[in-house]
Length: 312
Image (cartoon, rainbow, N blue to C red; front, side, top):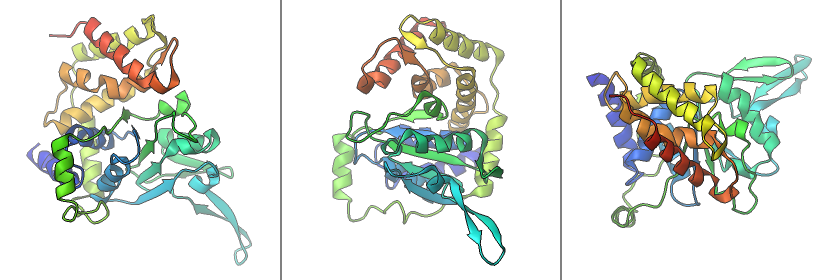
């Protein structure tokens, strides 16, 4: 565990050289990677969403591709396309940017739903189907998507099926005044996300992901998770509760969070800490203002946490 914590500390400290005052957000990103999940970051422009993705990717010796989503982007621009080879007299599949270890889907809600859906199979099955063939993606594989607030100009809200593929839905938020002062004062000395050093390689990440699978969740804690999920399905304020897939994703996130915290077992506090970022985009309220939907969901999840008994 000491070796594990040393690796995770080096990774986090490396990212914090660029991203100031966002320790919890960085923990969520690392947890998501170790849990084999995908991360969705929503916030206003300019708060560091893309920088966080770049820092995580560049801290690891892994393949990294960035896709700028626009309203004219096509699914084939992401997955790849078959091109006729004059010499071989046949079509050859040219892999798109989705074939990488970490994929940054920048401003994902700027593209149409058709293009957004091109990610579904890759995020769920770690594979891409094209021209009646299936191509496996390399492991580890993680999509880090950023999106602007849904009331922004020229955005297309992500459908529920797409949202459910993301393990975490988080916001960066503005830095504190102290951290922003530090940001301004160290502007010339702060490294850029592309220039920070690599601290872990592919084998390190795969080993850490294997360690996550060994983290214990006691039966009483599993019952607590089930009670929370059931409460979302029976809540009068929600039209749709957490799906079984959401429960599996939640449990894996808990294991990864425990490992990041230096433990090989989960606690009820882990459930409380991760419930909102993991569950709020998996429920649909009875009636809502689209621009305030996920804020409302967070409030409902917090209320459910207060109502469901915590195991002791």
